[in-house]
Image (cartoon, rainbow, N blue to C red; front, side, top):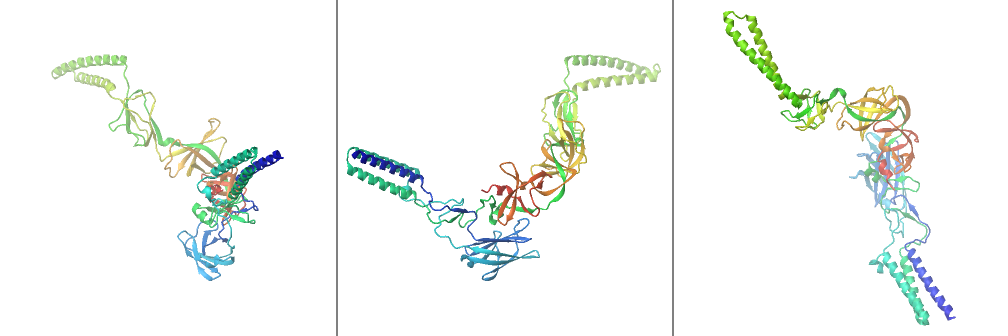
Length: 561
């Protein structure tokens, strides 16, 4: 019997220990009915739309905030006249610094259904919008909510004020283990009174721990827990749509476009790069190898403007030993001939007055002497005068960094001159594209207008080169940059043209757009897109006419969770 009682006591102690672990594991849980998360703000709000305006009214703190936007574009409408028929009569709303219109509404503090009539006038356009504002009764017993929608339990008292949850759990587990050990020892020593006391102490500790574990839980009846009491928070709703309050839309600068399909020419997308206009560029090359030397003003550096015919550098050809020997031998022969002709000319000049020498013979000797001196001087210039390298066209120095004393090889490119105002684009096509109508090139967010100049017939790695001239402003464009060329063909297709920023990608790689289904709600729509030009794409499938599509801020909406 004693052994049976001891086993019962030990089993009871182990059961109590397991209960403590279960109590700790269930800390902070809500054992009441399942609560549902309200996906929108708790502030009373209502909306109304017309063909021109979209209006949202939000009641807060006895005041009515009115957001007035263009229906088609979602642009705020400043400077409008807004009159409101309220339960207390007609009231004129005043423009606030934050872009809204506000009016005192003490009646909105009481629960009820309020029918409001708004008269909006702007730019000789008047519109009447009606809506019903529902103010629910104030919620009681609600727990504090965070912006993310999760309930935060209150902070327990006692040890938890100085210790963390993990520390408290460890201390309780150690204390229960100690009591269980003492209980087992008391049973082994047959001290029943001590065992009973230890058992009662362990039970009290576990009851206290269970009370601490359930502190702050909500065991009330089913209720909806608002995601953000008194705050407007953008969030994704359970059905996949996105709730974005008007105040957040103003910050994110959300803009929309009403889908009106039209007919556009089919566009092909080609890879390309910027090249120089062959009629406005050129290379400066050395015809013979030699040592480089700068002109009087020095070598022109990168980006320096130059004119056609400007001397950019000199090349001094090197002379071999055999060449120097031949030149010296030839110079010696010429010097000897010059000396002989000079003595002959002096003798003829002495005899010419007496008529012993003909006048023609004297003139021939003078011409022979002059020719010998010219040939002698040319040999000296060959050794001293370098070759001048001149600019073949107007432009700027795009490439080339010569250094004084550098040895230039024959046909080496010393400078590359480009006119930055005359640039072309070379695109590569893998199919023949006759009768190109219009083309644009995209570099980042910049769009360039192109003029067709011609297409090649020879394959270049199974592709055909097509040349376009950049028309208009070319500021910020550099030779060698890669671009995407969008060329129009005679074929036509129907769809909706939207900016490229309207398209977002799903995790599966599907193209999506956001439809503005109501004043503060957006839904994803899968679409099929095709290239149109540098800044727009064509939605060919997946979108019905007359829908409002987000064309600015779609990426920001896509990041809301």
